[in-house]
Length: 296
Ligand SMILES: NC(=O)C1=CN([C@@H]2O[C@H](COP(=O)(O)OP(=O)(O)OC[C@H]3O[C@@H](n4cnc5c(N)ncnc54)[C@H](OP(=O)(O)O)[C@@H]3O)[C@@H](O)[C@H]2O)C=CC1
Ligand SMILES: Nc1nc(=O)c2c([nH]1)NC[C@@H]1CN(c3ccc(C(=O)N[C@@H](CCC(=O)O)C(=O)O)cc3)C=[N+]21
Image (cartoon, rainbow, N blue to C red; front, top):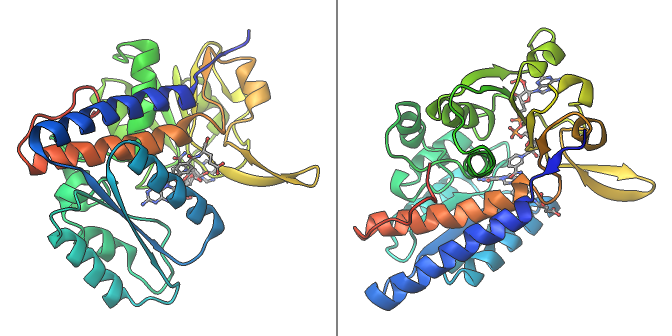
């Protein structure tokens, strides 16, 4: 069997087009333009590429992009002061502080200083609590993008067995909450899980968010399962730097029913969902109707 490849890049282009048309309507009918502020501390090359992509796509969607690039040795106090200034700025509807932050900064403190209504990453404890209790929240972009693709492919996910490999606050845990919200039977696996292969083989939906290149191989996949590969790993192959996922695409796609590729899968959807969250935050801030189908 050869799996259907879920085209995240095309899917993301569709989401961005829907965002852009809603943004155009907002500015025509209400004179409101959504604004996204992205804060990058330090000069990690991968983060710089990612932040640049976000800025370009924000502007392409008709929104305003505010980029704040700070030196790696910026103090925690200065970063907190910037976050508070962005909280108070009415032109800014969404705030994203790129992670990871340098070690001398308390990342939890920074994230929890963001106004929850502007927390387009959905990492603030208020949004985490709202999501966990099934209330309206800002939903983390990467898991939201995965959920959108799963819903589009399967329709209802109710009753399916889902396994999420990885328990980080930014991917694994919120992914599990969203799948539970869609009535999957959810298992979260991690580095201490016994017999990971057997756990994974029970999954109708297998989400890999591990950060280990090509760790999930075809023998860990249930025949016909849907495999979502969140991993973004830069590896050296034949003298070149290549991007690979946490799933061994060649062996897994021979067994799975559907699979997302890397690149061109979850990554582009993450940015599309960031734009969708910024639009949603803007609509909520102005008491205007929210776009449909762009939230969880
Ligand atoms: N496409 C996108 O938009 C995004 C992609 N990513 C990518 O997703 C991946 C995961 O990111 P993130 O969640 O931040 O990573 P973290 O490093 O925060 O978490 C990794 C998780 O994987 C688990 N793990 C590590 N090794 C194993 C193992 N051998 N067996 C089972 N579980 C294991 C860890 O378990 P334990 O808790 O026990 O240590 C941990 O829970 C990375 O490749 C990252 O680059 C991340 C964000 C967005
Ligand atoms: N506060 C915060 N929020 C995040 O959402 C966040 C973060 N910090 N820190 C880093 C991770 C990583 N992440 C990616 C998003 C898109 C691609 C992406 O677009 N990837 C393209 C390829 C891009 C390339 O070629 O490098 C693809 O998979 O096709 C990758 C990675 C968001 N993250």
